[in-house]
Length: 235
Ligand SMILES: [Zn+2]
Image (cartoon, rainbow, N blue to C red; front, side, top):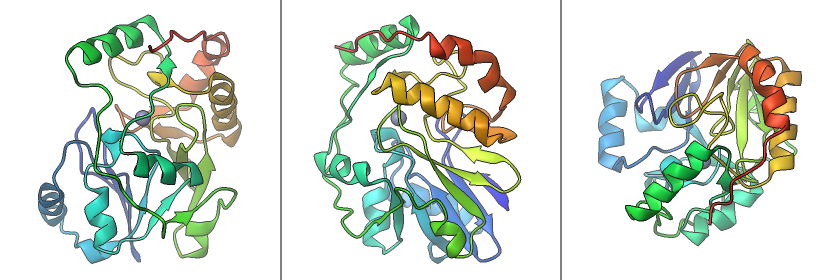
């Protein structure tokens, strides 16, 4: 498997390349469809090589050119909770995991950058993966789907057989996120459970969408803090 990042350091847009095709994880942030196609061409991949889009969750920074990909007929794999959110056309934002997260949340509201909207996306033909960890494996890609609710209820990750876990926004590894915690959390109890679930899965390396990959040891190190986490209301 070859890992290609079509995004940048802060907003990673991973493309997993196998002999039998590619899996695209999410659909970019503030990236036009034409810019995406150009970037794809630059790494020598054609749109027809992408066999599935794997949507880690519905937030505006993960779905920039999703609508166009769906219209182009690329199958999408998502959690059932994602469908309604795509139709809603607006972020659902959780509460803040740290004071710094709260500070930046207030700042983005003041600058008018919060609650970003998008034109409704109809994903009624999407492949729903709830409880079906092996859908991709059954279709020739050695990847397991892992449900990781907490940041959002529709958060899902992808794990390779050699211990790489692509985990969406379940964890983060760049400022202003600290100690690998995601910035916003909708359900704190489920978030703590998902943290524990990752540790039990024993991946070697986590690949968040925001920031560099990091070793699972960090999840163990920061777990006591996560277990005592109290959220700052994001209102
Ligand atoms: Zn998110």
